[in-house]
Image (tube, rainbow, N blue to C red; front, side, top):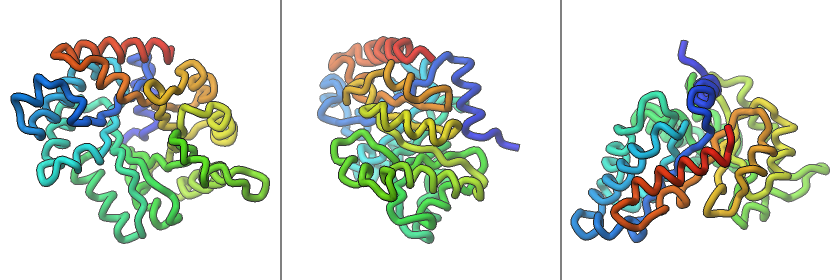
Length: 270
């Protein structure tokens, strides 16, 4: 039987003393000029991301690939993404940061694409359209659907903190998702931004064993110490993207990324 996503995460955390998830958001304008000047955009993104993976793979427990940056490359974007996936070690977890959330039939095909076609271990999902838009992402053993709950962007408060029956909406979403998971073969996790540790603590108190994918440490200003305190002993992936990817704009970008990843891992103190 395939180990659960949480079990794999726990094993990696123990073996590597890390909860670091490296986010791959390759902005072509920020990739070193030495790559952009000699390669096509597709080749530059592929080489940049593969170098980052190779430099940080032993420090991270996961890589989060943001689909938007690869889709922006056009027809070859999926091929470039696959080239990057191919160099991620098999024991390291992968997160498809695609934020899917369509009606049931469409969601079924999105899930098939991500889990079967591309072979990801997990995906980010929007719950706004309800259960039938989330269920297809929770029906595979060994995988995890990270549902948007309390996100780190400034506009997250527009809906997520609305009070409903005395509690913020993000708590209702989190509790509902946990109930859906009880009837699923896979796992459900939550996306919980690092920029509001108090909301994170509320969610951890509510769901002590639910995996959290936590963006916002580093460039977005989230504190590693505050996040680890708020996230408690439950399973977590702490994502850092720009602070690692763009640690240097020169030809030493991979070495600089490794140093930044090592520093972030140590700050997280896993």
